[in-house]
Length: 123
Image 1 (cartoon, rainbow, N blue to C red):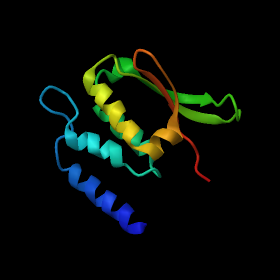
Image 2 (tube, rainbow, N blue to C red; image 1 turned 180 degrees about the horizontal axis):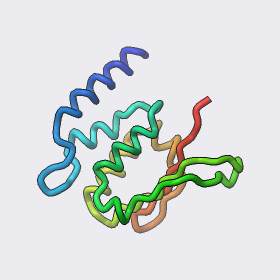
Image 3 (tube, one colour; image 1 turned 90 degrees about the vertical axis):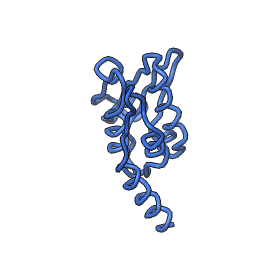
C-alpha cells in the first residue's frame, strides 16, 4: 500500500515539472492527471491546485465557511461554476476520475456546470 502512495507522489512531482496550462489557458494533460491521482489525505491542497488553474476563477469560484445542515458543524465549502468553458469541464471530469476525493467532497451539482464541495474531516 505504501508503495502505491509513494509511486503516486513521485508521479505528481514529475508532472509538476511540466506546464499546467497551454498557450490558450487550457489545462494540460499533466495538470489533469495530477487532479485525477491526487492523494485523498490532502483535499485542501487538491482544491488549491484546481483553483490555481481554474479559468474565470474571479467569477466561477467562491469558497468559505458554512454550517453543515445535517451535522450543524462548521465546514469549508467550495462553490464552483464552469462558466460552460470546456477547460473547466475537463477539470471537473478529472476530478470525477479521482473517486475517493470526489465522493468525500462532492455535495451537489446542477445543470449549467454548478458544483458544491465541502471539505470533510477524516477521523
